[in-house]
Amino acid sequence: MFDFYQKKFLFFNNFKELYLHKFILMKRILLLLPMIFAFLSFTSSTRMQVRAGEKLVYAGSYNMSGLMTQLAQVTMSTENVSTAKNNYLHLSCELSTYSKWDKFFKIRDIYESYVHPTTLKPSLYKRSIDEGGYTKKEKYVFKNNKVTSTVKKRTYPESSRSFNIKPTSIDAVSILYQLRLVDFSKMQAGQTKSYTIVFDEKEVPVTLKYMGKEEIKAGNLGTKECYKISIGAKTDALRGKDKNLIWLTADAKKIPALIKFSIPVGTGQLTLTSASGI
Amino acid sequence: MRKLLLVLTIVFTVLAILFSALPMDTLAFLPIGVAIALSLVTLLKSEGNQKKFPKILLTISVICSVFVLGKTIFIKDEVEVDKTFEQQKIETKQEAKKELEELENDLE
Image (cartoon, rainbow over all chains, first blue to last red; front, side, top):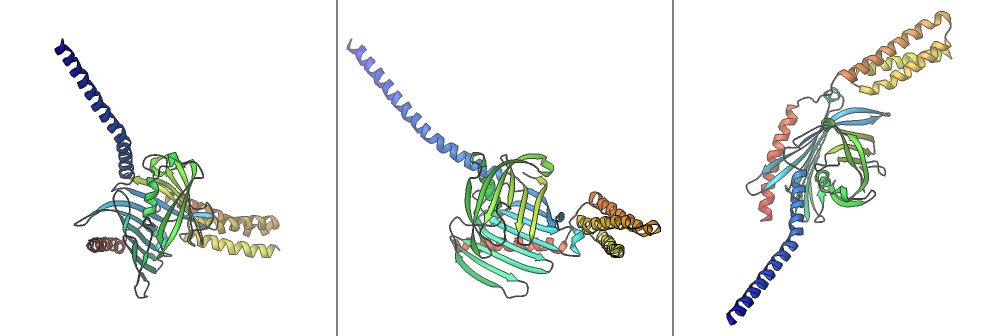
């Protein structure tokens, strides 16, 4: 009889222990699940959206006396660059005038940024412009919260200076890619997001305003539903309220399909003609 | 009045020819449009045998518009392969790699 009760007690005790163990395990899993999902969603969004080998080609038009005239080709590309110690994602934006304009006003500009492959935090930003003979070279080295800039204009001697920046400050190229990591599907029209970029050797606050969805022709991708975003910056380089706009495809890739800009000397747009490696 | 219109039509027709010949793209439609409008007004203001010259100017402007439209539709915009620019890109990338390595050493 005693043996029976002992066995029963042991059985219940084991059952209780097993139940307790399972409960703790379940609790742990439940606690870990959101963290796992958050990690997976973060890594998948960053990896999926900006990949090495992506090439986006745009036709750049400028409004001349009320007529949109195609002037140049803009190519945005990404590639992996490795040093002995680190891997970087090289983001490059090239602007070249069409051959028919070269005799009148030849432009060959390169804007590039070397960023962390997942966080897209810049380490090096370079800008080399040649606009009808006017040349300028800029280099910003991002070292923690400090930028060391080197500027060389035309025949003037090279100048260099260092200045402090916010830890979240980025450059003018990486903001175009950082934008693609934002989850606009959860945003309401009119909602804003703030950034700080380093441009012309100073920090410039940039505000992005989500303006809803619109259908846009996206070159070889066909007509796509896009997120319409207004870019506002406290700089003389951009003019007007809600006149600097970018349409990103409303899918996981968030490819910039159309970019409209308003600068002191006029307005223009970049229309996506081809997208590959996305 | 007719003489002034005729002079303006001639000026804009010459501009239309120049803009059509140069790679001005759709921008050429500006002088062409003005030249066509002025040719039509001059044609209305002209009588009898005075109509011949404005008709010639109108025909020239229309030919210019067809020529520009053809160029816009059929000639594809292309970027010339610029060897200097390509070389510059290679050099910039090599420089960047060195600069990144220097930055990595500084951060250590």
